[in-house]
Image (cartoon, rainbow, N blue to C red):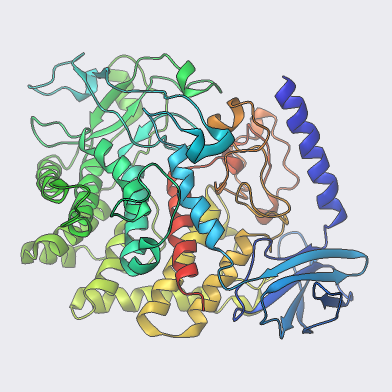
Length: 570
């Protein structure tokens, strides 16, 4: 109760500060010297001035447009600032208000480090040590060395109630369970960014227990979850359990205080294809790694076994309601349900082709290539395969088609920037807002734009990616830098059990929250949203799972996006 009182007081203080600086919206973390500089003001007619640290006026400001929000009707004035190419901290003034704009050649490097470090805080089955975690240290929880095979998951080699060991990995989101489909997606998007920016990630020091070995910290962190995923494969037949879970969500307590029995539940075709895809990808990228000898070969065997199981069990879709009608105990945790596995099959075939060179996988992928590129999510992973074809096999017909479809998507969003309220390619349609939109729209679109830049060299795509980063970091309708621990106004009360129960006022840093969600699925929980408008439906409240939860797939998008963006900085 005491912590909640102080968090409420801190939230009210932050709200007061926000109201005092309500009109100026800008990237609160930092921009690169060669990047465009844009601020957005509420209303119109206010002049903008910029001063350096010595109080001297610098830069040239120009109003690009005044535009009315299509939803709220608010007037926004979009102002560009030219001439700020020197590193420094600048004061932006509009009327009586001021804000700080930081310019630096490695402007987003601290954010890149923190976004990846956030996965260390999510580790299970090991103590999170003070020398790596500072005040967010905690004892180990969820050792998962006594996990029970649920009645839905039996095989001849593992009857109901069999005890298995499945330790390690990451807590999935604000809850304490572990899910294969989301783990596979999260690892894949980070591995893709790593493959495109090896030199950058090889030099990124995150200060985790493995730092200083011969492997990039990013690969070390991903290995924590890859090793857990291997334990989720039934050795009897190669199928992969959908998730490791308690029957019900734990309360907002620390991991060491959780005591529910944990289970592996039903093997699913989507989990098995996703597992096959990411294990094939990891096998390729960890090949010859001296710190993890034998892993590449093990992952390749596991990928093939999972793929064959999925091919033989195409109807094994995860339907939690149906499972609960047939088996006990009932399970009420996150479903990650998906009633179409064609996209998982396409991605798995793609990765297995890249690993093995077997043309049968290429032919399979060719037959199920999507008709257009849309942004990937855990539930629609075909675009992960399309990235691979476009970037790794551009000479193939699949590579050519994937490139064309990716560029068509990127061109369509770039074209909307000219009418944007916030000078961004995304955020200009109500469809851009919803569950996890900050990652699944702005972050992943940013990754796609960077891929387009890599494919074409056209600077418009890099500029558009930077604009999406500006949105995430403060140039948005709510004036939030949406990553914990960064900016002048950032989330203080994420829906995250570790942050809520640890007795520390500040949340675990480096976490991207879900963001504005006009669906407001948690409104019945007495969440007080400031607005129902698409880009304003965000509540920095602990109970707001619809707008303020964190998740590994969302942070994976942040790692992939910001790391790639920072690697391009000049």
